[in-house]
Figure 1 (tube, rainbow over the protein chains, first blue to last red):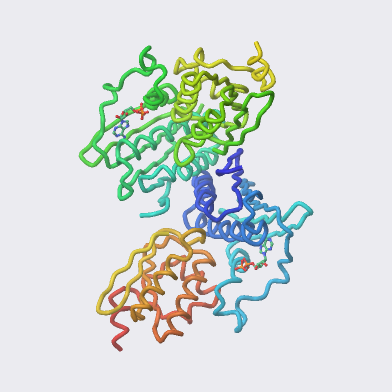
Figure 2: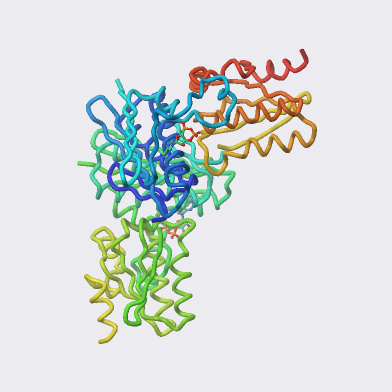
Length: 140
Length: 140
Length: 113
Length: 113
Ligand SMILES: Nc1ncnc2c1ncn2[C@@H]1O[C@H](COP(=O)(O)OP(=O)(O)O)[C@@H](O)[C@H]1O
Ligand SMILES: Nc1ncnc2c1ncn2[C@@H]1O[C@H](COP(=O)(O)OP(=O)(O)O)[C@@H](O)[C@H]1O
């Protein structure tokens, strides 16, 4: 697979950060089609960019034979987005707290923390095929 | 301006064909948000890609200081899309017919013809600031 | 668009994937074709099963590939033309230009006839 | 993200534009900063008015730019922090780290004090 592939409400990219903008354009497009308000679109787009960054870099380790997929659904008043990679998974409870004094001036380690702050629900599931992170945000 | 810029239902790119996929991802995203059916999404996406190609290459002559913008709106049962460039404009009536025997095996010259075939309405407006092409497609 | 290729019974099978809309990879197919022509491999099938859609840039690539091969004593045929692409070929009157087959096997076999 | 820069009263003003989400241009700002440090220009204002949003990659770039300048005897300040970015700075407890000003003029003037 090379360029972004769209199938219904899902977009897939090879594991390279050069495709971050394509996922953002697709997700922002769908959310505008759903008439979500701009500030919420930004919160969701920020969160998706965090998780795609992680899936490309930590999950698939930038192996561009591996794929990152993002799918999006409207369920009642909720937007539900799934980000999938083909990596080893991780334990979100084991992540160090970016607010700790010794981490405050580090330049990484805030991604999952920000997603948790911006989204209503974050669920990380590790399977033998990879990691599926599901985020949910109410749009009313 | 560098990467695609999104403002509401409008996406703008510098005049380079490397951003074709970004426009496609955004437009396909919005149309899926509008729950347009897949075959119609393809017809619209094909038409937008034709007009963006033209705006980048013929209109803005690949000058990446110039911008191509695409905006999309749902008006009742119609999808209306505007493609804008900063070029000299052209007269769509002056385009030669790609079905003529002598044009049949040419490798260019079918873009506007295809847009006319796939869309319900095509309007080309040349102003002193550039060309605005408006296409309309009913989604029922 | 992504492009892979393989050979079957002396016939080159080209498999573009995704959308053919122009931009950076517009010349991929044409470049690949010239590689094969240089190796004197001029029987080519383009398998369109993986192509979501194409625009006039895609049609232009098919046409110029077709004429390039013809001018070099070869032939380009199509396989697995999807409904969306077939209707573009019909409205542009290009359908009669291309020999097209329902399966790759049929397309490959047709070179023996 | 696009990055432009200019100088005002010996202060460098960096203007990133668009979204700061990582990828190819993540290092643009940091590279530019090192250029200025090499020229002994170490008073820097980052104008955020044109930034739609940033993620943790963007925050990381701001932090590392801030510490790089500090370690080289310089200073990085912010101007025109939008509401979306301010709330990210607040939840990550980074707000007190950065001196920030409502206008570029105020930020530039603050270096005289
Ligand atoms: N999809 C993933 N696959 C494997 N590990 C991950 C994934 N996402 C996050 N991680 C792990 O969790 C850590 C924290 O992630 P995050 O909070 O986004 O910060 P950062 O990515 O800046 O390190 C990462 O360093 C990585 O070890
Ligand atoms: N946005 C535009 N600005 C200026 N000229 C244009 C524009 N769009 C189309 N044209 C002119 O119309 C012609 C026909 O366009 P089209 O049917 O798309 O075929 P092609 O682009 O393959 O030549 C172009 O060759 C160009 O001269």
